[in-house]
Image (cartoon, rainbow, N blue to C red; front, side, top):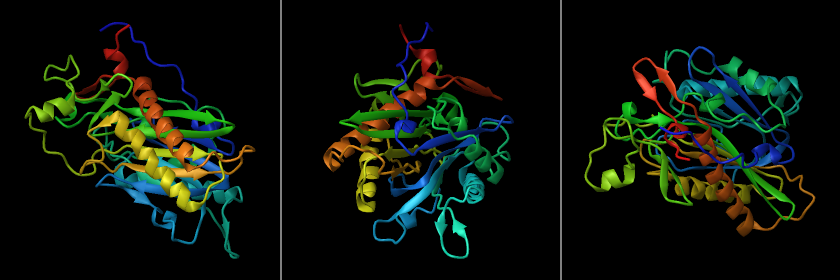
Length: 336
């Protein structure tokens, strides 16, 4: 394997005014959580395409439901156990006086989604409320760390033919700016399928050949008749948060989350499977001084930001070895 070359940073979700990001990475095993904070509140939407999601507070984001603005989105490893990280975010935000004033208390609204990373190390170690609190306390407006951190610490890519032939996934971020308006994305890439560079059609991370020395191309292998391994539902999932400083409605935020899935479809194959819980959130702070370019442009920007963030995630990933499981990273297969 030769020296790797991978893309330079492509911006960050924190380029959006009003957005901060914090990670907590558990030192005891590869797992963690990542929070996207909008302390001033953000109009929010969500779209769930995977058939095996693990989510919290997504129903309140339906366009027909009452509450429009949320204060954070929590992404976590640990499968369903990781949803507890949102409790810590609520506690931290309440201490900051951030939330919905209901007269008797200030209630922070923190939707959340989780991914499955339990095969890496001791599955009894997973993000909890303390982890979510720590992620919030660490949040800044600086460009967030990428790779094997936060919710991406235990992410894997390309498990159709078994974890032993998979590669390391991770977390990545990117942003796009058009005429004074910014759309950014934070993505945790933990898909069942491969990650593909849409510019070249080349698989850059995913299932490997039986000897582990080369990338297989899952799509071609399945179409050629190679049988997938039995896959437990919910043991995968790519999570994304889109943010923009444009002023949009809750219904438009829902449409923006839908458009974000186009970015996943460009870069992940197969995507939205019965064993993935793919979930995309959208946040709009409305703090841009420039006028909104309209939904056609914003949706195009959202899909592009998500696609770039997926690529950033796998290029930033680093190989890990946990017990008998050896997971190389995209950079290990890169060519100059």
